[in-house]
Each structure stands twice: as structure tokens, then as C-alpha cells.
Amino acid sequence: MRCCVCLFQQSLQCSPSKMAAGESNSRSSCLNLSNSGPLGNAPPSNSAHSSPASNRGAVGAAGGMNRSAGNSNPQSGPENGGGAESAVRSTPSAQNPPRQSVGPSGATSGAASNMTATPSSSSSSSASTASSSADASAAVAPLPSSPASVLVYREPVYNWQATKSTVKERFALAVGSAVFDAMFNGGMATTSTEIELPDVEPAAFLALLKFLYSDEVQIGPETVMTTLYTAKKYAVPALEAHCVEFLKKNLRADNAFMLLTQARLFDEPQLASLCLENIDKNTADALAAEGFTDIDLDTLMAVLERDTLGVREIRLFGAATRWAEAEAQRQQLQPTPENKRRVLGKALSLIRFPLMTIEEFAAGPAQSGILTDREVVSLFLHFTVNPKPHVEFIDRPRCCLRGKECSITRFSQVESRWGYSGTSDRIRFSVNRRIFVVGFGLYGSIHGPTDYQVNIQIIHTDSNTVLGQNDTGFSCDGTASTFRVMFKEPVEILPSVNYIACATLKGPDSHYGTKGMRKVTHEAPATGTKTCFTFCYAAGNNNGTSVEDGQIPEVIFYT
View 1 (tube, rainbow, N blue to C red):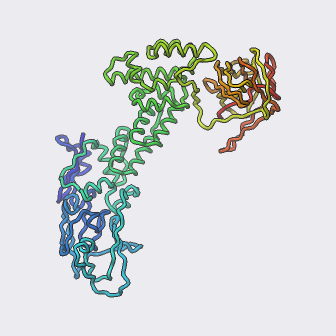
View 2 (view 1 turned 180 degrees about the vertical axis):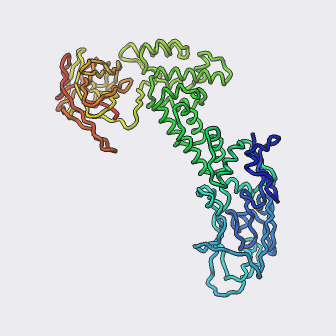
View 3 (view 1 turned 30 degrees about the horizontal axis):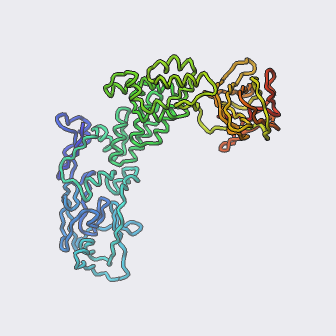
């Protein structure tokens, strides 16, 4: 439904309350404004004594006014800046001059006047004489019975209404929207008696008017998005802020994707960030929400590329498949595997198939028809052989944890030759606070660039339960640096509980660490929070790693 703003010269024909009451069943909703109503400010006089009601000041160029040397009784109209067909006249005389109020700083008062009166050094009390030149008369009219003044032009401030958050402040200058001010009072003000607003809902426009002229905030779940759009369109940031705050308070997992789409559309980065954080924390619920399949492709990609989603990759693939089916229908395509791949486009490459188990991949993606035969074969090889071949999909683990990645190193020196014969390197450890281990740093070859096959595990000592593992590989460059090997998912480590870190490497002799420390403390720079690791020898089948020397020099974790 469209809105219309109708301007009449003499009286207010209809009001926002009538508009809300639905009196426009047979025509578009409209708002009729009088000549001096809140949307049509009274136009300024040619006299420098008049108090303008808008931010145009007394300069003809700023207000779009035509002046001549002898024009002491101008009538405002479309051609001279009189928005809303105003009929206000100013007739200054020496006997009864119009009042001129001056603020504390000495500037002529008015709605953001662009002219500043500056007293001259002369003490004469005689009336100032108008300049004989046309330019001078266009700039300023005579000032009867006052000291000589010089009017200094100031650049108009665009959208000064945006800095005023209350009705009192806005009315002290002019109506609370720079767009309305330009529409009705600017140099190119409309001359029409009816202005159509085809893309604005009547309820949203009514909410805008109520806010502008009463500070009343009238928004709800059904109108908040249209009101936000209207507030942005007409440059009313105070109402826009109320709408965004309403959305923040009502943000839930079941509407996070819908609000994320709107936040991106309306360029609200703070709201978008909150939506993404909510999706990170409640990924499964957000993906299951009804509105998920209605999002656009760019929003889908913005979510799939995140490292902080708290859900297994197989569920992300299922959600992406549901979205692709809905999108194919929106594009009037049959939901075939080929068309699903087509509408997913680059989003398909953001699904991290290597993070799935081989069973998950075989039962789902491998049989979906969405992947090509070549992609299926390369992924099966990735799951089953070492060294693992390159695949076209991301194999970086997602971590549903927020904050900064941390790591500790337990050796203070590096030496050469640590051999491997199929036995695991193991070290027992405990911590003083809850953390999530996401990987280890391991030493690489002493013989130059080399590829290693490796299995990493974290084992609960008392129950001998494997809490997390990954069969993978890594490439080293021959230096004494450590090389990251990550788990597919974070492993929760509880305080004062014993765990075993285990790494089984297959490859040439490597560097190893010496002068190990039994206790290592990490202190967070921002908060000063300390995480203390205690290391002990892990008995049993061990390749030789101990507290003093060996492998597994680094633990990578989040707090």
C-alpha cells in the first residue's frame, strides 16, 4: 500500500489519527498539512529581521528566494522557497519592526540560521541604508533603528536533525527530518499538493510521524522492519536506533537468520554481528528454523565461511541441501541434484567435507548427486590414505569457541634426532581450569621438507576413553619449528582431571625438545587469567616422550 502526503494552504484536512483509523479505503493513505504545519515550515521573509523556521537562513541562495531592491512585502511560493504553498508574509517598517532575537553568542536566532550578525565599530543609532547594488539587496534588507551590522554567511549543516533526539530540540529548529526539510522547504521544494510515497507502509509512516511530533515510539514485531526502512529513508536516526534496539531484544535462534538478512540489507553491522553470534551459539536450532531457507545466497555464504559454528559438518550439508531445494523452487527450477549444485554455487565449496567421518560422508554427500564423481573419489582418498591427497574443500576445523586461540610450549630447547617405529609418543597432563584443546604442535624432519602421517588423540586417563582423535598428516620445512596438527572438533578438558596427549607419527627422524618443564602457565594478556598445565610421564607403550624431552612440545587451546 502506498502513502500520500497532501498539502493544503488553509487547513489540516486529515490527520495521522484518521490515517490510522483506516479512512482511506477508497484511495491511498494521505496526510494533509496546513501552510504552517510541522512538515511545512513557515517560509522566511526577505527581511533580515525575520526569524526563519528552517535551516535556510536569510540568503537567497540557501533558501531559493528571489529578492529585489524594493521588495519589502514578499509572498513565499514555490519559486521563492515557500514549501507547502505557504502564505506567510513579512512587512517590516520603521514604526513596528519585526523582532530579532539574539542567542547567547550573538547570532541571530532561528532554525539553524546561516547568517551571523556582527556589530560594527560605529556608535551611530541612525538606520542602516540599503545598498544600491542588486547583489547587496539580495543578501540583506535594511535594519531600521539599529546599529550597522554585517551579515556573515555560514555553510548550511546537512541533516542537522540527526543530532537532535527529542521533539523539543527538533521543533526549536525545524521538522525532525532532513529529507522532509528538503522536500518541503528546500530550493527544489515540490509544488504538488499531493506527494506519493509508494514504497512506505501507512503503519510505518504513522509511526514515523508519531515519533517526530510526540517522541512516541510505536513499533512491534509486525511493523519494526518497515518502520526501520522508513526511518532510514527519511533520515531519522533516533527512530532507527529504537528499531534496532527492539530487534536486539527480540533476537532468538528461530529468527536469527531472518534478522541477519535484514541487518545486511539495511546496513546495520552491529545487529548483523549479534545475529552471527547467536547463530554461532545456537547453530543447530538456527538451521532448523523455518526462516532459514528464505535467506539469500550471500547470507548463506557469510554463515558457512565462519570458523565458529557449533555444529557437525554433516548437519551443515543437510541444511545447505534444504536451502538449495527452496532456492531452486524460487527460481522455478526442478530440485534435481544438478540444479541444487547450480543454485548453491560457491557456497558448496564452503562446506568442509574433510571434517566429516568417512561413515557420514558415505551415507550422505557421496550419494546426494550434488558432488561430482571426481570430488567423491578425491574425498574418499582423503579419508583412507596417507599422505592425504589435496582436496578442493577446506579442511580447517571449525571451533565453536569465542575468544583468542592460546598455546603453551613445554620445552626450552630443541635438539636433533628423534626416531619413529610405530609406537606412540605420549605425555600425561592436567589443568587448573576448564579449557578446550583444538590441536598439538609437533616437531618435523631434520632432513629437509618432508610429509608425515600422524594420528593424534586425547585420552581420559582413568577410563582410557578416547575423547578426540584425528588421522591426518602435515608437511614440514626442515626447520626446528613446530607444525600444527588439529582435531576435527574441540576436546573439552576439565580441571584437576588427568588426560593423555598422544601422537603416532610415521616418517623420518625429527627434531625433539629438551629441558622440559613440569609446570607451564599461560596468562591471558587482556584479562590476566592464568591457565596452569602440569605434565607427568605417561606409563605404558611409549616412544620415549617424557617431561624432560621428546615430542608433543605444544598444546593449542581455547579458554
